[in-house]
Image 1 (cartoon, rainbow, N blue to C red):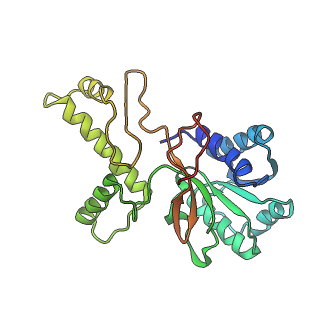
Image 2 (image 1 turned 30 degrees about the vertical axis):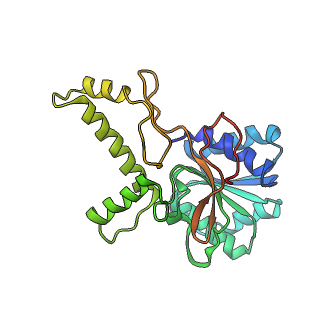
Image 3 (image 1 turned 180 degrees about the vertical axis):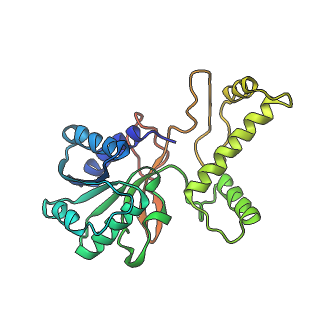
Length: 251
């Protein structure tokens, strides 16, 4: 999926330029993942036209009440707060947002942009923005997502779908395509050669068509801006490849 540096390069300017969110705070894990988004938020501030009002580091995947820490960012004037966190941490941010009655915008990052991680009592995450990698697993009419739901119903009846298992499903299909091309006398080298021969592979709308080569093994360089609305992440743009044109709204 799109690399996190690219996601930051799309989302942080988008917040300021298209959503007019120019005072941004961040709650981040102290590990490399969290610091990546912290560093990119700071680096992109001046060229994008926003101010970083503060940062709240969290060093545990099972944090306690963080209401006081979030209040410091709110009191500093944050109109948006980025969550470079894991699901258990983000849940605490959402709870604190509700406890404070703060009506600003949460911004999720990476795989956290998934309904299963942000929805909860009170719907305090409603309005959260993020960079989605895959369409809605429950409602999308894209053929690849419809096939995913059928596979879930067949092999895991009663279990809910989510973007994370959709990711596993579509990449599993891609590996199967490589195995098909490699033929019966399978070796590592034949599989690599087969995968590198893929051009414009149809992912059924779960992601843009996939092409590999000997020098490019990146299956999915694009995602799209989305917003949590009524408990579902809804697309605000078409597919965006970081470094390409600025996000365009869906017509």
